[in-house]
Length: 169
Image 1 (cartoon, rainbow, N blue to C red):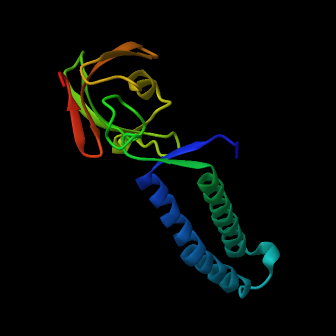
Image 2: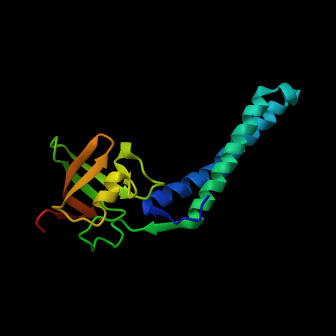
Image 3: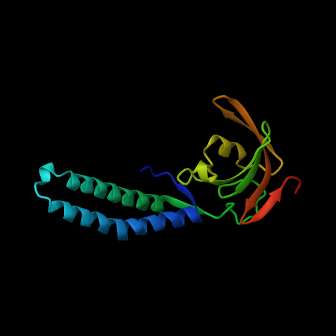
């Protein structure tokens, strides 16, 4: 893993810690039991259950190492990066965007790339839309280059620590 700082929200940090605890306390024991059980089937050279269990063990141990590395490099940000004092979009902000072409409104939380999950309305600060709106204020219009051309969004509202900054404030 690179030595690049990993930006996480408090929620993302807590989820990683929760996953790490689960892997170390529960999954390790389950995999060890599977390995022990598969050994009882006999000849390990032709034992697919044993091979599967060992592969799962390698995956679990690899994920534990990956999470530990991420936590060492993590920079935990407050929602909105500075406790809601900024009127600008930053990592942790919740941003309501209006698609100027179609009139659709969508709210996204801006997160670091390791937490990005567009299906749950979490977009990376490094994504095209995330880059375009970083540092912008409510009321600003941004243009985002996409493979098909450009999209335009108006920033309607910015929530930081449950405080909203709207167009005109």
